[in-house]
Structures are given as structure tokens and as C-alpha cells.
Length: 86
Image (cartoon, rainbow, N blue to C red; front, side, top):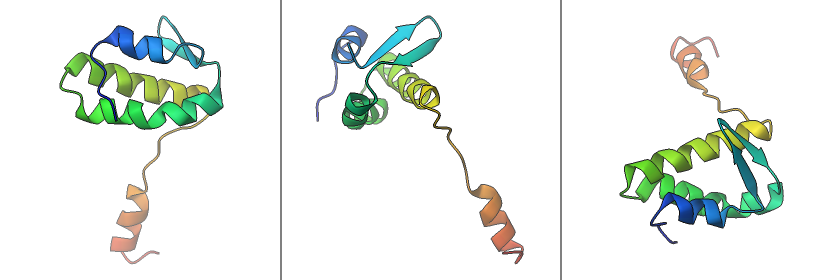
């Protein structure tokens, strides 16, 4: 998997897939976005450039939100299990 060298590399690779408008992401092609998620995550985790990492993370969260996907935690379930309630 390829680590991108600049924000413009990331934005160029996402042309026609998402559109970044000020503080939000508009998903233009959800199927293509699903196919690019791997390298976005890879760059969000392993890129040495902090700005690229942060931008990839923002794109992932914003695109997911635009598609109606919300992050969630099952911490409450674990706590209930620990108390013997489940």
C-alpha cells in the first residue's frame, strides 16, 4: 500500500469520489469510496506526516457521517458484563 506524500496527492486520488466543501465531505461515489478506504486508513495510521494523518482521519470520519455511518462503542456492554448484568 502506498503512503501519500502530500495533501494534494490525497485530494487528487479522491477526485470524483468525494468533494471537500469547507468543513464537510460530500460523497460522490460510495462504491469507489469503499474501494479507497484501505489506503485512507493506511495513511491515517502509518504516514509520518502528521497533517496527512489528521486529514485522512477527518476524511474517513466525515465521509462515514455523510453516508449515515456513526462510530460507536460497546464499552457500556463491557461494563454491564463486568457487573454481571448481561
